[in-house]
Length: 264
Image (cartoon, rainbow, N blue to C red):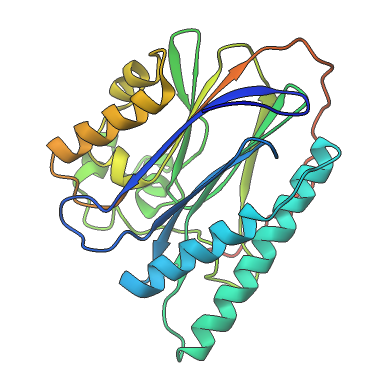
């Protein structure tokens, strides 16, 4: 899908699938190029609770509306995430303290600038000039162990607690988010995905798919590859390609609240 927004032009592809093992799809996605917003949310809490959690987060973001500046867009995102977090806390308490939360990976774009915001282990990649970079950092126990030098990347693949996440929306009274940002370049291609993709597909394979001319075809190909390899989890992929239009840049003013508390 091509979209020409107020200041930017994008192609967007998206796909979501329950996979080959699970009967329910607890993933949700948001594609609102007219607002400069794309997101993937992966629910946690099992079947109905997980699906409800990711749907709550997606619905909050879907209604974010048009922003007048980069700072306004970031503020709208923050308010939407805070509202979703509060709603999930309320629902969990109504269900006698049931586990209910969602990962979140968001791409924002405004005036030739981008920001990536995330919580949990859904990822954001940037493909630029033939190289792939993972912008997001997994909020998982395995990643924390790797950062401390206690696990190698190979050991982390098989570590029993590799799927335990340390941040998520809805787990604490305030959400804990991380942000990175930069200038857009023509041809930049962003890949947002749930861990159902990265559990089966390597970064170089994502690079090859996302480097092709058709972003929806790339999403379809990555899903097909994941299904071929067993698709043990729900799989969601959103691919966004930026087309340069030489407009004036507006820099971000990130002031997002980043509490220290983490999910257990």
